[in-house]
Image 1 (cartoon, rainbow, N blue to C red):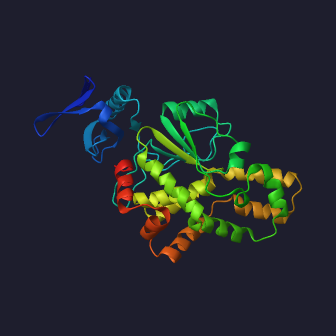
Image 2 (tube, helix red, strand yellow; image 1 turned 135 degrees about the vertical axis):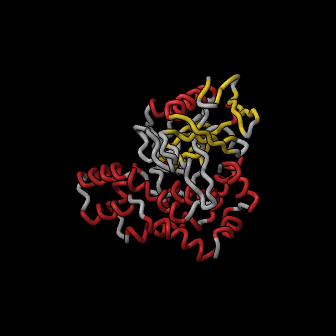
Length: 342
């Protein structure tokens, strides 16, 4: 098959470069996408990234580009295709806050490999169609659950075919409110809701148990090889939010982009939060309790910024925090960059 100078023959992409015949194994391409050429000629630019960290750019017509990517995907079903995610929401019906970190850009100009790193809320009652999507499209191989034993008991994850499950509870039962006792929690809470959330995020950053679990989490990421890995807590905004923020720092994403990624939870969870508030209102909770619930269910930049501020206050630099609190060496962090960046 010929696509404007490119050919796919015998599971290889054949092309001529600098007068020499070259080839790439289809299975070695890990990410491919097209975009309009900067030239005003109606053509497309196709970019290929390989597992060997090579990058290739080819010019062809829009129709040829679409046909080429389709043919390449047939040869390599695990190929990540497209460049519009940028940490955006997955097209799932039963998981509102499920995201692929792929294509997010680092300060060094590299991109996070698409199709490998997923964050979400819990997988309780995930639809069959969404299960199939994560299995077939993402080749989901590992699920990491940051929730407590009680939370997992009350809302167990649906087991997705082919995925291995690991429980890494970050905090103890006393620190976390879950759906089962939410009504009682908000009804009896007498403190300052914002101060409570700031203290909660400070605990996520500085509590020794939380730090150990985040260290274990990064080791799992370090040793993960094939397919996608998904991590979650309850809603996917607090415990999973801090885990993601720390990981994005390791990969070299800017603080501003880390904050923007965190705040996407506010957008994606708005419908769920409003539903909970209506439920609490229907149960007759006073306005004070509803206001507290709204504050605690929200994802606010102030919360994640407070976690970073407390880290800097105690450890002075993020690298010292990673080494002394999380247990990651410079080698570990560079290894993670090498594994997940292109």
